[in-house]
Length: 355
View 1 (spheres, rainbow, N blue to C red):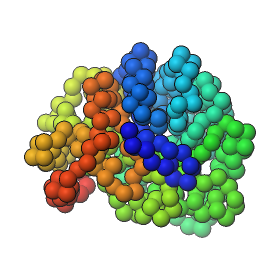
View 2 (cartoon, one colour):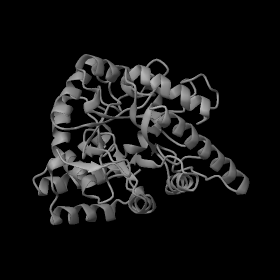
View 3 (cartoon, rainbow, N blue to C red):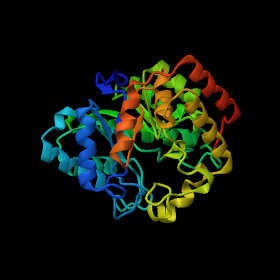
View 4 (tube, rainbow, N blue to C red):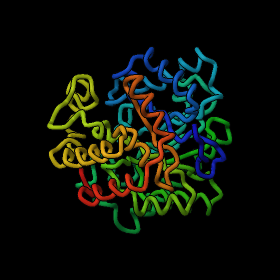
């Protein structure tokens, strides 16, 4: 396994990060234990979860994945072998808040609850799952996004960011978390946190994880520039576009048990159905043809592509079967040829925005 530094943290993390969101719905605890055992044995020391997992998020499954991981830590006794990342998730049913925010009270409560579920004394990387104090264009929100406007709105946003950083500093000083990061944030949001930390001598955001794949490359420009110049580790989530790049959803198919199947997504299916369309199918088929031409597995090619980006630290992979996990982990050692990258670029020019 290859390793890289996590921004300014000093941590050395595996070039592949283990995603965990399927544990508790699509995967049982026993299956999750098998995945964790295998990943660590392969040198994957960087694991990512969130308090709202497993997915799809519901009050009934909230905290399930952290609990499973905590049970593994207790059973295996290998907590210190893992760089554990989790997230503060501002969902209304997490703490009974009608309008959840990153307030000091909410953050402190969330940290304590995650520590209990994970059965640990510390969290290596504590992340903000998405912005709560301003409109957010991630997930499926980019088509209708309208930013906050005006000096008053900006001041409120900045004040909340300062409160957040001060609260997280308290958690660091208490030894509950080691480093902090962002998730599903913009170039402006990342840079504001970096500048405020430097100005007020507060903890620095060492990473950001956003959705990034062959099918979703909106961060190639402004976010990439901020991360590269400010030494913020970029962690792509869903490098396989939630499994779409595997081709299993082509022609409107939704295989039983897959993430986009109705029995898994339920009433949340509409949030992500834009990722399955005739236009997306065209891009997926084109990338599958590139993989075939170069003798590659399309999923491994997609993961290797993210690793090829010089500003990317560790893509976060997820799997529901051991075969998927083994293939995804092996992609860390795949080097794409210049000809393959050129063919990928040709497809990208034809399909720059797929969903």
